[in-house]
Image (tube, rainbow over all chains, first blue to last red; front, side, top):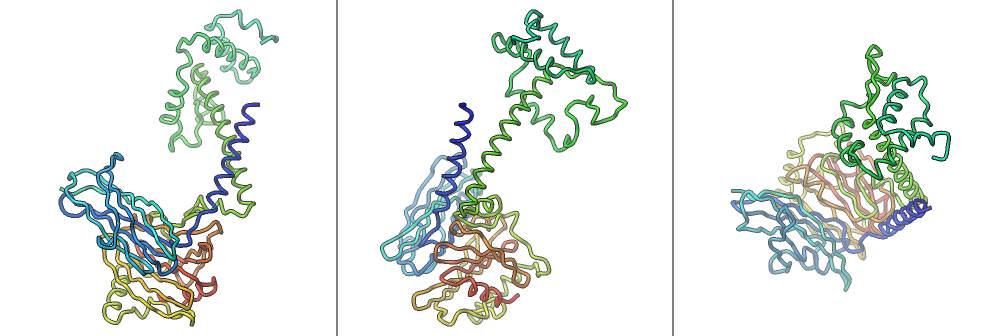
Length: 136
Length: 294
């Protein structure tokens, strides 16, 4: 009897999760990506691209958080128009941010929050870069 | 155990093992019910007072995965005396009790796994029937996003694979005249106007981005060459639950998907990607794709 309930609960969870997943999509975001590259000694650059569904009031990256490969947070930066992570009145935004003074030989990755804002509404996604080794 | 085999409880575990061994050594005379009864008695005793005779289930599973469930062993019997496998001249030897118990446990786990898979599959079918493209999730997309996987970025036959040269030609054309005559679309809907051409170069990618604006509509075309094939798999496209359509134009296989009232088309080959997104009808998107030169 217990097994029957377990299977029924499992099936219900699966179906509900599928239905809720289907509700996702974005009125504001079209595509995005974030990529990590090794730079000079102890430097890692995070490149990103964000495309909106319209000419957005603001579009780009609101936050980049750098992590060591073991999951420990190292540093975070908040996006702004001044630091080049956010653009105004654009259909898309491409950019980069370099983290320096990192430990050479260690691997790092970043979580990047991409967003687009239009006419008072907005949408965002947190995406993860590849992992890359800080050069010696 | 209140059955004809109740007397087995009176025997020692060693005697039961001998009985089981003798049964297994003569497959023709094997009494499955009798063997099951013997094993049940042994299992009960081990459950009450573990002697280590049966070993750890987890250790047995690990051992099976490491030593038996290997590509080299695919299609082979777990036991060399199985008459359905191997050299028939090989002398038959009965499998030790511990092996047999492991097999039963593995079979039980297999049955549980099969039951779970059945439930999962049933759930997926139910969700699929409700209009959700669940099976698409097994491939390259989910109901939320689409992306090219780095190892599966489709390579179309008959196409010039020198993508860098193609991309270089694009960049050169954009440098010289703002647009490459062969790769830019030869057509776009009359209601649109090309309002912006942007070129971007980062460590990870080079992009030529075109944006078109209509009265209330908008769409973009991006030509992007990534640093390597791994990075192309990190780019995601928003999509709704509708299924992804494959559309072949010339030598290119485009994936078309909807994102609420927007539509996107994406093609990737190696580390190069062309993507078109915006307020377009499906036919308009296909016509734009058809008019992108080789």
